[in-house]
Amino acid sequence: MNLVASVCFIFLSVGSIFTLIRLVVGPSLADRVMAADLLLTFLVMGIAVQAARTGDGLYLAVMVVVALVGFLGTSIVARLIERRGA
Amino acid sequence: MLTVASSVLLLLGTFLAMLAGIGVMRLHDVFARLHAATKPSSLGILLVCSGAALTVVEVTAITQLIAVVFLQFFTAPVGAHLVGRAAYASGLLGSRTIIDEGEEIRKGTEGFGPN
Image (cartoon, rainbow over all chains, first blue to last red; front, side, top):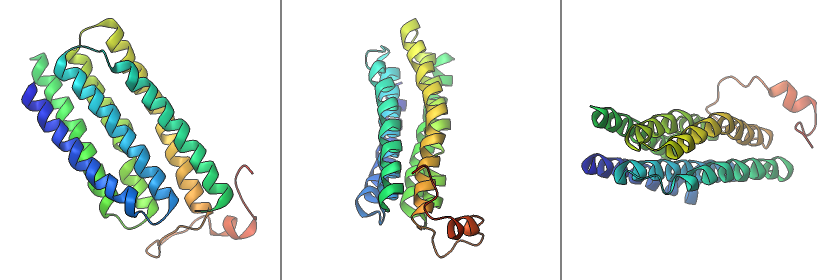
């Protein structure tokens, strides 16, 4: 399980680096919002992989909170883009 | 046996996440990037949470994992749709788009949206 978790973390890290590049260079605000949302998704996945690696669900409550707050932030910034333009 | 199934699910979900990262990096348009970015936020979360739920055998942990999957399945498409609509309303359509079905709507009514 440790090896599998390490490979999973490598996958998540590679995806996060690419998403972070898009977050920095992304030409419009919509690109950045989308990249930040994807990074939060990667965080949720990482918490789940960590729970599977250690075998205890101590941090799973954090996962629920991150999922909710991510949706809140995305929808609020999307409304901001509609009002103000990208 | 359970460990093997859990490992396969975890690897599939995180591999999908890596593919989404590559797609977000390489594709040419906001909408193409959204197309790549919204796959792991529903299917990938489902796979990874199923893999974790097969390993962590506590009632509270499995309940929280199911709650996350339900929340993501309801909120992730809505959030992606909001971002896509905002991007379309502010004219971020790339030059490689072939069919633009909302062109009349965009030119006819000023400031479509909830404002």
